[in-house]
Amino acid sequence: MDRFLIHGPCTLSGSVDVSGAKNAVLPLMAATLLSRGVSRIRNVPNLRDTRTMGKVLETLGAQVTREGDSLIIDSSGVVGVEAPYELVKTMRASVYVLGPLLSAMGTAKVSLPGGCAWGPRPIDLHLKGMEMLGAQVELEGGYVVAKRPGSRLRGGTMDFSTSSVGATANVLMAAVLAEGHTVLENAAREPEVAQLAEALVAAGAKIDGIGSTRLSIEGVKEIAPLQVSVIPDRIEAGTFLCAAAILRSKLKVNKVRPAHLGATIDVLQSCGCSFEIASDAIEIDGREADRALNAVTRPFPGFPTDMQAQTMAVATLLEGISVLTETIYPDRFTHVAELRRLGADIRLDGNSAVVKGVAQLSGAPVMATDLRASAALILAGLAAKGETLVDRIYHIDRGYEQIEEKLARLGAKIERIPGPPTP
Ligand code: EPU
Image (cartoon, rainbow, N blue to C red; front, side, top):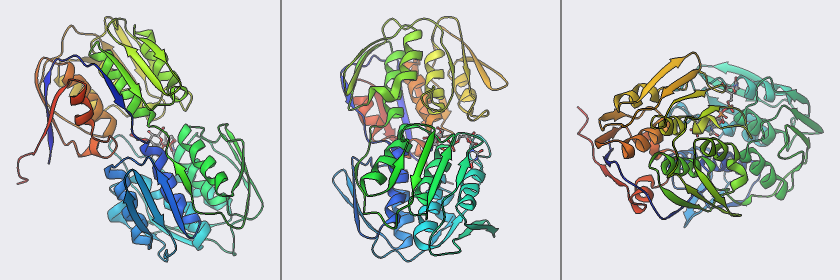
């Protein structure tokens, strides 16, 4: 198992290009099942998760080819309806094939994802949404088996009890081919959901309210294959902004949509970072970052839960007491114990982390526990004095494209080293 060896502290400088958004491309890939033919998705990051979703589609009979930064997905030969446990257990987002398969093929058999590193993460809202569209849903042997009684699903209304990115995207994909009108209230309006809706509209779907919490869908009989370029990854961009803040550095982050990063920018501004914002680039000056910060995770446009761990790394070296409160996943704090190993002073109080800034972190061996926790440990390792060894970095390979190369080009001392052979 590979590890990262980091020598800190360091200062970063220069500019970095952000890759396409993991959480936007995964539903787009699943949505290629809604039509028969060749879809082309551009600006696709080469990640473990995009490769896993490619395997899910291939298992169903699609042909998935990478050409440069594009994925060409030919769904003409899709005959399968099952997303197997072996793939779903490695990536929960495999559940995105549920809606498209059900709507386009009439049946879907998708393994239940189970828990994740920081809690249960249910998919009850995905299932309720399919039932609302007329599907019969049963659980059999660890699988969700969903069936469409007629030749099409039928429109309906759903008011999501919790704002859910995954359930909104899944039900939206199922609803575009349903007969009649569907209304989704309290829908998630994350940029990744908006991109999915826009790509579906470009292919012939009828969706109103894109970017709002009320999506109104008029079902159509068919849509064309997708042609879309993936939006920049706002969480990767935010991670580089946090790198500049914790390393008191000046950086230019290119190929971003600044409007997707408003809450992250506000939090970093509150601790003393300054920004110059262009239409597709953000320059951050983190040299004056010194004041404690407060952040509460919320659905978009609020502060993203996917930035909580990296922001906590920044807070470990700010003067005073910072508080980070997690409202989306109350237990998403597996990074806390590892940050403490680097010398951070963090106390958990319910769903809040209370971080007392220290003068210095010091290098140590640490273990990555999930994707964003890994990013936080890398940032803290770059700021810590001495050598930090981050184990289990397969988590980071799920969602950050060439992170060590991008950081090294900015001046970080970080290298990937092969781990010891597994006993
Ligand atoms: N929820 C339910 N029932 C459901 C679905 C969700 O109760 O059926 C709850 C969750 O437990 C949570 C809240 O709703 O409390 C929001 O979860 P959501 O469904 O929005 O999360 P998700 O779709 O499973 C996506 C991202 C996550 C990101 C969350 C929140 C993808 C592939 N994943 O997950 O990204 O944290 O939205 O923004 O888009 C990551 O990239 O590291 C990551 C974990």
